[in-house]
Image (cartoon, rainbow, N blue to C red; front, side, top):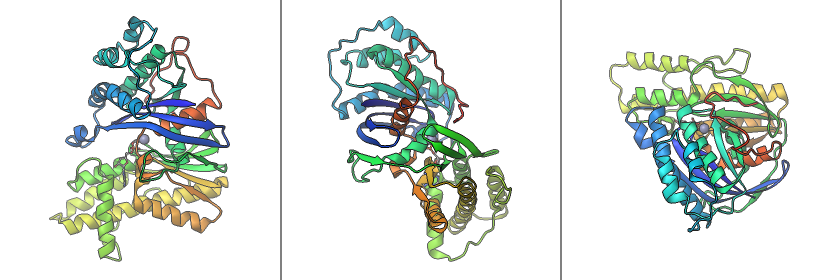
Length: 394
Ligand code: KG4
Ligand code: ZN
């Protein structure tokens, strides 16, 4: 079947067309079209994502991304035979000024594409941003008479490891992946730091969570303290790497918050504050010092993440360690988790490809396929569904 995926929970406007086949045990996926518009340039100057600005950007970029994804998938055919009433589409897009006009002018003339379902992120995330994607998905569903699948963004990050990509080409060979359960999913992004016990697909329990900041947020804030632009994760990583090449030992010492707390929770706000105090004491932040601070911060974050992942694996007898979210792109953290997996033994470590580690629509379409195996899709005329910023996995 073909699934259209839509993702607008934060600062990426993403749409894809995914071919998905199989069942919960053997799934195979192939990306037919994939378009991502990153708003990073818009938010860079403010050092973070402003929800209302993200919302505006999504409304402006959803239609261009849809056209791009359909075009790539060879599904964009002009001269429509869409039967749905434009008044209804307008009602559905009432909350998104500008989007209705764009849909009327560019999408309505497209013939109903060969798509079987639309999967859309409805939470968690920035609620104004989520609403744009949800309303757009409802409008497309109504226009083309295609069922909708509401998707939890975090489930997207979990299933992102199922598509093993050829890193040189986005149109990779179809593949089938099996996961042994129980699995522990370490979800590390700009908005979340969670440990999830997956007893099976679509059967999750959150067993660890952050008490304050998410790990990616701490990376971004520390980067800001060091005078680096948003998002700071990749830049911290680069600085830390060059310090490791030059110095065998870390020259600063930061705390490892909650590493011995005995539970699976995290706290990254204290670590961020410790960096602030450290930086304040240093009269001049030379490039060399910045590299050393970045290295110690990355080490501290990696220590805590690895220790908690290890604890969770043992507690629940996990056979697989799944890692997802933007921070899973961090080379040092990946290496530390690989080291952990080989030390524990018998654990299958699954990491997403670089492209699927940050927010994208492919993982949303994949999660939609997983959902379809356990839950029926919905019809927006019969079932109301809303964007939920605080949506929980369970
Ligand atoms: O999953 P994601 O794209 O968006 C959310 O759902 O939050 O994650 C974005 C976060 C940002 O905080 C960014 O700084 C962080 O992931 N990130 C990294 C790296 N690449 C992205 N953090 C550390 N090292 C990286 N290489
Ligand atoms: Zn995410």
